[in-house]
Length: 236
Ligand SMILES: [Zn+2]
Image (spheres, helix red, strand yellow):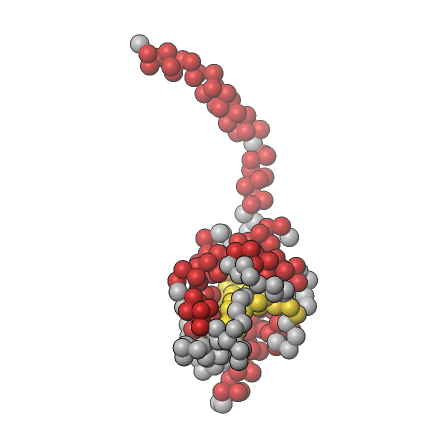
């Protein structure tokens, strides 16, 4: 005899929930409007993930002999997976070890062609935001921490500041770094969209280089980048 009594006592609650659902269903248009606002078919934002360098250009060489291009690709692929998980459309400039040159016979010529092709891909993508992944290197091994650079385009400085601060709050607690202008970086100087370049850490610092080779640290880095990017995209 206890069960019916319990169900009966909850009846007003069920009726309230049912009434609310029916109210939305009959009212109709508001629920449909919200859904369609959240899933626009056109003008979708795309995050372009650029893994710096790529064969035959390995970039810097770490203190244990690992090429920068390999760090960049691993981190870029993890970042892509996270961004997709957050429902953000991505475009990888490269997802293999190879750079994207279209002409040239010497390494120098291929490098020029590769950079031009990266600019072409970025500038031909609508509603794009670029995040370029690189690693730092310095003769003095004591330096560490992520450094964010920004293009001169609208929004880039703001996004770079947000990410630099997010790194300091999450994984680079001792860092006093500030976002810097991407002066002299061909890709960043020639793009039309919002863009940042992230030097994730120093390949010349043995502790950081070790961390950068681990799954755990790469995941941490990518979760900081992905959440900052996603916050930025949803608030602009
Ligand atoms: Zn680089």
